[in-house]
Image (cartoon, rainbow, N blue to C red):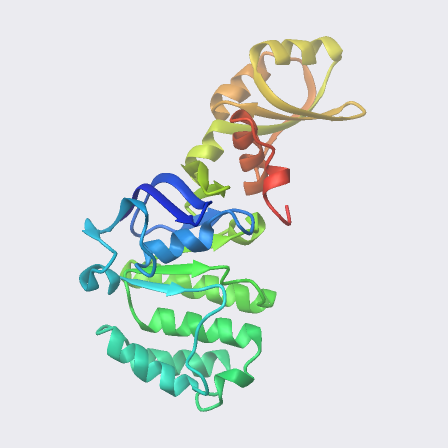
Length: 302
């Protein structure tokens, strides 16, 4: 488990990360959402032990990570702009990381290079942005660490490659219990892969919850009431946090358990009624509005 306890990081007078507290459990995908400049990259660099926090501590499986080789060997950090040695090719980087990580699997590395269609002896400087991202990901998987920190890993990749990477992460999680931490500014990118999501804004965490927990507590009901008085009855017995109406068709976002919500609607006279699945965007919009934020102003590409 990764435990972040009261972390603060400043650059001169600018507070990049401000008193952050949360946990990332092993064997699950943690999604870190936030706009550019929200502090995601700074936080990931501190979790990987690259940067030191000004206040607080970060523990990897109960080990302090900064200046601690035993903790650092459990983590591989894939930066938004991966660093490679000047004039190096993929073989050079494989040899380097094989020295850094005792668990590095060379056979797996070259197998993945072939699968991704990357030339191992080609200079990395001639790679495209997407190819560099792929190489960094391959190195990260091949290191066989317990935790893989991914900063905007899907940015610059085509849809097919994004899905391939998600499939590989799922495979590694199932086979050896890998714990991925994925930072992104795009909610849609993480919807089908994350178990837990944290929303970072201006260096602080607005929200950190399991998706299943959030989905169970919010329902989206689409219905046609017999008449307007039936909607008024629904508003009186349900915690409606959002209402959309097109003609006689209502789409209501309601706080409460599914069975409880359906039971309440059974007492109402409706022409049509069904519970629809919520998207990650809708869940976050509902949750952040409760704490006084408009997520549409916080998250890009929503």
